[in-house]
Image (cartoon, rainbow, N blue to C red; front, side, top):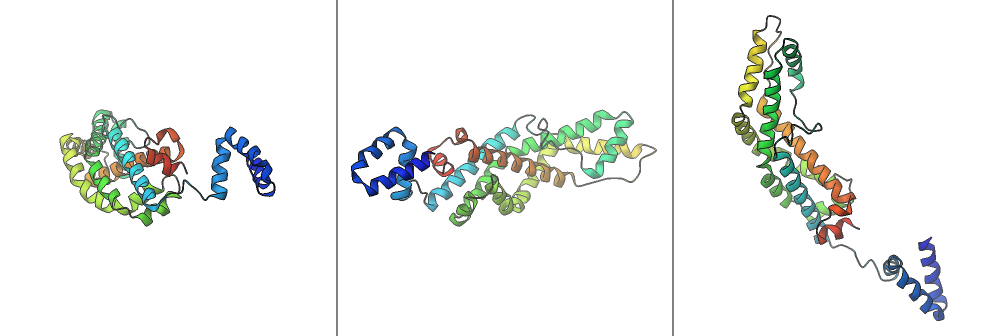
Length: 248
């Protein structure tokens, strides 16, 4: 309705200048109408430059990475988040079921906890790797991402950096697994399983690769949530640039 009033009032201005003061008074009472008039007759005064778009998206991803990795690197960051908690891989779930039915819950629980602790530990070192990848975003990339879906920037980051991140992340995960005794617990699980008289074929997946993949998936999941917050929730836009870019 306000917009119809705007158009009607604008028509009055151009057809009868004696009503200029009337329109002026209307605009004084409603700043949103003033902004619309500016957009119609003076061009969009709040239009963004490509540099602002690129910097805004990089700032949003930087904020998402910082917040996300900080959250996930805390104790229970992975373990108590049902959406990203690392469980035994599908090929080991039969082993888990067999051990639990035989009363060996403790080694299974320790193996699962240690994998999540490794991911939490590795998340502490993830931020610099992600931030370096964000720096590589071009202006053309940014312009296309701005109008994309709520996780478009995160999807771009995943596409462009997963291979390099995996390569850099694996040794961190491997060291973390050793630090939290995940490898020991993992070996205990399968050693216990292999000793059972009704154990079937042995399962020996690459623990480092598996936890690396799950850890990265969890971090991307969290960054996507942070990006969505910035896009949808004005309160999450904590800087002037974020307010300008995502408030359009």
